[in-house]
Image (cartoon, rainbow, N blue to C red; front, top):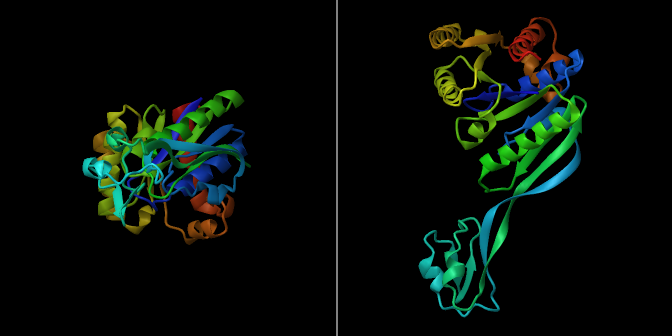
Length: 294
């Protein structure tokens, strides 16, 4: 079983659209896959693939304090010791702002009346679902919650376990944008990274950062240039940079309005468009399969 992770330096580059197309092509070619949407802060792969949820599980991320108003004597010890300004005071009553609480437990430690308890913080949910292309693991992070790297790891581990149980030959990960903790959790210990870049100055910079991340974790990267024909000069600069860095360009996708229309109709691009655009995506998929020997 091999793992492919698709990432980009920012959102909106076409990363998720490509993942959905790869899922469609895998089904067409009889490649058994498991999908993992690791963009847990802003998941959208489920919109295209319309999964049917089979299992839902709570994701917890540390602790949060709560003050019992029946036990609280209003001594103010918790307020004076909190370094995160998470204790609120109103009309002599003390309570915890859960958005500011870091779960350190100092308030519980210093409270003389045992009025503070540390409760498990609910961080969101993760799901195991069925799609017409194979099983899919995805998640929804709670509003204002952190620890996305740990939730990404949970999603990836579940997807890889399902792949092992079902005999799937590939896990396709729709990674988050950027280079932060969630991306690191998506990229580390994968077999191949596909970086989707746009031919703009910021797109080149974002691609360079993503390549640095892949090199750091020892994962082989490929690059896909989306909408390459909108700025041929910048496309040339991306190609030159990749040649110098020893990175292969897996393919170049031209701008096509039907790409956007496919999203509007909630279809993977290769199922909606034809001609040159579909052939370009199929070529990238075949290059990935050759590289991963799948």
